[in-house]
Amino acid sequence: MLEARNLSAGYPGRAVLAGVSLAARPGRVLALLGPNGCGKSTLLRTMAGLLPPLGGEVLLDGRRDYSPRQAAQRVAYLPQSRTAPNITVRRLVLHGRFPYLSYPRRYGREDYEAVDRALVAADALDLADRPLPELSGGQRQKAYLAMALAQETEAILMDEPTTFLDIRHQLEVLALVRRLAEEGRGVVLALHDLCLALTAADDVAVLGEGRLLALGGPEAVYQSKVLERVMGVRLDRSEGPGGRRYFCQLPEEG
Image (cartoon, rainbow, N blue to C red; front, side):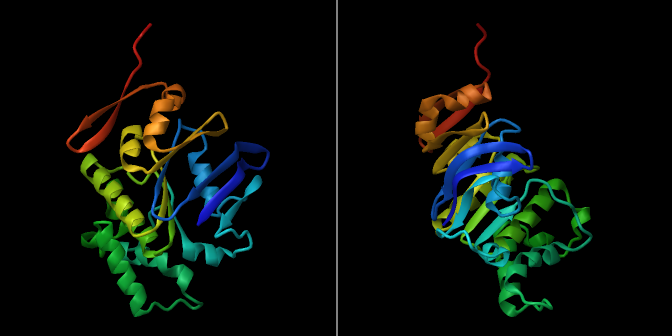
């Protein structure tokens, strides 16, 4: 299990978050919510090992003394923004197999099979032979999602995985996230869409004011009103045949 314990995250001379404790628990989806600049991306990058903690610790199965290679075999990270190298989608997705290869890199049958599974799961198989720079933003998002899935890790961290996607494909990505959890993986994802997050997640972490403001189930966090306070919106919900749904609107004047 990947865990942040009393973690302070940020950059030299500038802490963005302090005292954060949460985990990518197997079989559960944790959504990170909060306003722009609250530290969602910084937290994910620190948990992924791309930024050193300013305080506290990041643990993998209770250990601090793991190598970058060990971490990459256990934790995948999908960043919010990426470059578009002039390679095909299949070649990009093969990069997800790097943690399992020795030097010089020689792919085996198991690597190609993992790539095919990831392309299918990300609905990107039809893009496999297309150069990345020729793709739309949404298509590139699918390609990078497939690369993260090709790592076949126990935990996966996603920073705004629905960016550039239309509503149908946003829902498909969140359905994929649910399937990953059902397979026993721990998923942590940062989202801007409060309503989608509250519907899709098992747990919700609200970040703001430089700290973790709330952590719990979607309904408990909804009832606490903390999201309304930090996001400046009014949250409501309804019950229907498909279950509970949340929706946002601007607060009433006066």
